[in-house]
Image 1: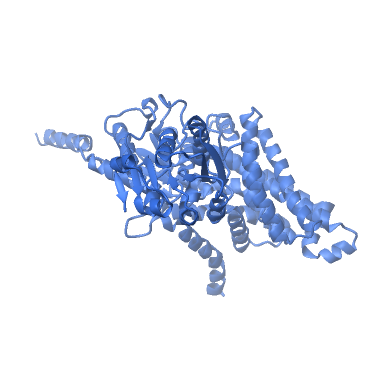
Image 2: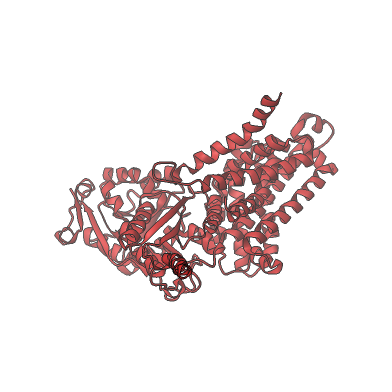
Length: 295
Length: 316
């Protein structure tokens, strides 16, 4: 793997790390399989791109993207807790609705950011580093900041209520906590993180595209589980770090798959998804194999 | 004397790679998804470079429709340090243009390079980028439909509103239909599973159906063909490959030829040292007219002699 490919994988790993933190929050903390992310990732990208296009500072556009993502998550939460729609279905409904919403926001399916000021450009100029180094650094800093805030939040009283909502909803209701409220809050935060991830990805990719959310949940779940397997999740802080690590490992697996020499009689570019899946399976089972071998 | 010989030998060895005509060029290809038209462009491109006498070592990357992988491919390509990059489709081109500023990038299969932000202007792109647009000549498409279906009042268009290229094409189609005095009815399908139903929604509302170069609809074309055959609606497409599958006719870009023309642009950069930023964005030189007589009959249409006479390919 070349250094460009390596740093490119880190950069994608960090950019999607925010989304993986969101998936961790719903899937592990709330025990809520949330497919909204497939729609809230392009939602964040769309909001950020439209804002930058209108002259808003790219950093401020991230805040706007977060707000939009929070609303999207809250809609799923509302459908589930207030209208009593099954969690999986509620999130799918929001996801498909967001496709149309995103087209409306952008007014077209692909909004370019090439030639517009983005965080990536601003940070590259400010840091004086080449772009292939500055981008992973920038995204790493943003993700680290989000992780610290998330860990802090999960230790507050509200955060503990959120953790308890996933662990034992009956007990926490008996203690007088409104679990409907905590579920809506949790989904909102999760999708705010995902939308921010989408905004970063769009600024890095050179534009927002309405189809960029496809497969987000797959990458998110794979990353969360990969991180847990390799790094464990004994405490909240450890699980949060594991989620980010999982995101990095997932993208490194894709970089490895992309870097394989492709000849006419060996693997072809169409095998990429299969090879990536095999590499992830390998990463998932390797730690267990090690335990078996050494015990 | 021996020393002198050694020096000369060393100089020759050093100069040899520069003198040799068959220097190997590394071309990195990035493509968003596998699709007959896109693959035809890629193969046409690589074959033509070879035919032009260039020794090319390609490395092909296909993102399997995944935008995250698409960006990672851009990093991968950067690491390969190629002599030239071929970017097939809009998102693939956007990702490499965003990342790579010091290598020539040639794009192809991009409908609207200006809106995609790839070039500053079509005549002088600027920077390290140039390429080809596959913008369909909508005026000629509408003229062909009018010629085949005289007295047409309403035309239905079937497309995915989520595909950037299709939206551009449909906007163009609106203008051309307005000029031609034909009303346009739209039916959109967000994914291939929705194509059949979208086609059905046009029945009774239109005299003929048209599908632009739209990945979603074209991938599920058979459903739409079935609806048009059952309801005797002539079905036209924006690409020639679909004619073989059962649309009536298309006057379109031959994607293999388009790849070949893109290769000519690449050769001008690799061999003649032309600067991409100074090479105007090109459109396809010659269009191909394909017609399908059987499909026309099943859809209740007799193709006029004038069309049959100038067809490049007639499918019985």
